[in-house]
Amino acid sequence: MQHSTTAYRAQPHAPSYYAASANPAPERPPLQGAVSADVCVIGAGYTGLSAALHLAEAGFKVVVLEANKVGWGASGRNGGQIVHSYSRDVDVIEAKYGLDTARALGSMIFEGADILRSRVRDYGIQCDLKNGGVYAAMSGKKAEQLQHHQELWQRWGHPGLQYMEGEAARRIVNSERYSAVLVDPTGGHFHPLNLALGEAAALESRGGVIYESSQVTRIEQLASPIVHTEQGQVTAKFLVVAGNAYLGNLIPALAAKSMPCGTQVIATEPLGALADELIPSDYCVEDNNFLLDYFRLSADKCLIYGGGVIYGARDPAHVERIVRPKLLKTFPQLKNVKIDYGWTGNFLLTLSRLPQFGRLNHNIYYSQGCSGHGITMTHLAGRLLSEAIRGQADRFDAFAKLPHLPFPGGRLFRVPATALGAWYYQMRDSLGI
Image (cartoon, rainbow, N blue to C red):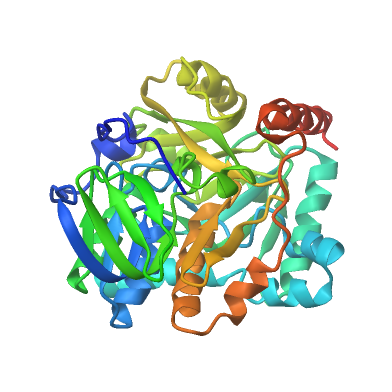
């Protein structure tokens, strides 16, 4: 596994609401010289931090290498919403891969949220965590899909979803755009960058070491992997690759089976009392379109609104121009509101829309490709990676056995082909089917 060794300069956080309101964090120097560890983790996002913290709690000596800063990628830029399951739900998994696979994966669909909440509770992480999430429908057909969602999750041991229409739905999210909502009291929302920073501090409290500004340049697959950066190297018994959409071409075999995609988010100025009129429940909201919108209120009553996908992860020139029309369709009364922040970030898409777990050899593990459904999945992934390294790989292998399909036509055609498919589903969304 080779990578060009051109000089690398660490980048600051995206110009987001989250970066502007982040809790204080220490400066973590880059790796210099040679160090050793039981486990080396590439990437200080949720997947890497979750795996590292689980392992450190189990007594492993863990080193994390981060090219930029803790939570620099999707983990510090996302919508901050706790949404259960995977980007393809259990009914799709059962139809494609059979009942045994559905049972194995279905037994874990609510676990990631429990892990996240336990981290916040056990380590006293200040990240504005609030309970309650909403799925919203824009048509009668989409409302039927919400009812199917409710029945499906009830069958898989999650009976608490509440379906509402009309005025009852307006008391949850006050928008004429939605004909029905499905309320999940066990959903929730939080400040995503502060969660990552808190998990990093938790790892360090357990003896873990994080090196920022330490891009990995190459990996030697020896009996004990050696991970090289520009200024140092880590020799470890195990390696966890958790770079996701920001791994680049460090490991071509992983890059060939995934595609970075960009999503856009804006944050309004603080809305004061108006915020409570828009979302009286103070729950987070996402619609159930294929190309969905998602939004919530921050702790200081800014509306954080995201939506849209840029296939191939090209940074759009004007985030506000892309997202503001979506916001105004939902809340037209905000036509004169000021947008304080606009930013973009990448998530990693797989052809199946299911996460990819696996081994590059007996002691190099990876997890990637949550396909836009990563907050709870990454926390679960960290636990499964930890279990596999500790010799309990059954649950890890339930995911690793799924086929990891390359995009048709290879890297050249994966962007236009995927965008064409998205266009088809966008047309279906616009017709309410």
